[in-house]
Image 1 (tube, one colour):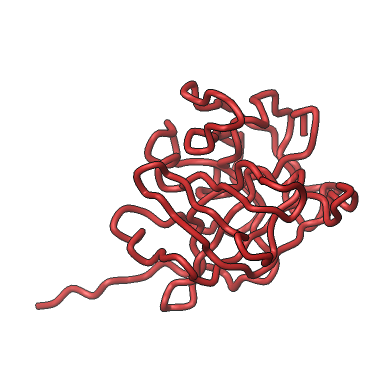
Image 2 (cartoon, rainbow, N blue to C red):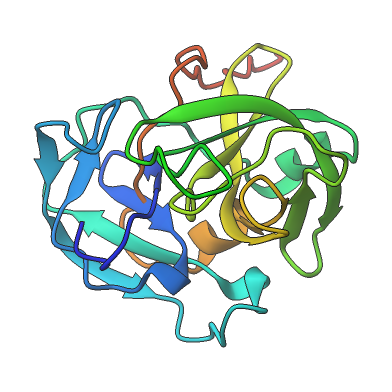
Length: 212
């Protein structure tokens, strides 16, 4: 709330939310729950947009973050990080989520929705992922900053991008910003906040056993 419009965010740390830089930094409160009418609201300690963001065509730099004044009341979905990015490939099934509109006329926003779709392209050098090149589920106005999730072999979900821009209107082709890169650049706890998508199982961190 406070953007002058609706945006979604992605919670990657109990006190850190990542969202899209084009949403601005005038954030008065972040809402957690199944709708924007939820009573679970937290004021940010501060928010900052990427100073390198140059406008709508700069999807690779379209990230910002808010540090919360207190811990979020929902589970954290950790980001894909470092060498874990090897799990991503074109054609892979992924999940998307957001509070945006549900129709091409941009109505129905304010309710958290999620869908399965596929990863249609990814550029690690440019920090951009593309989805919905073939008519699968996609995003609409208000979903900016919402997460893209990938399922790990242990069935845990991890965020690997946030919605930036959509080509072709509601439900069109989406360019997404890499979560991992934004997290590395964001200062403080980690990076960004946002509601978790409804149907994903609660994420579990993988534990590695030491060999003796």
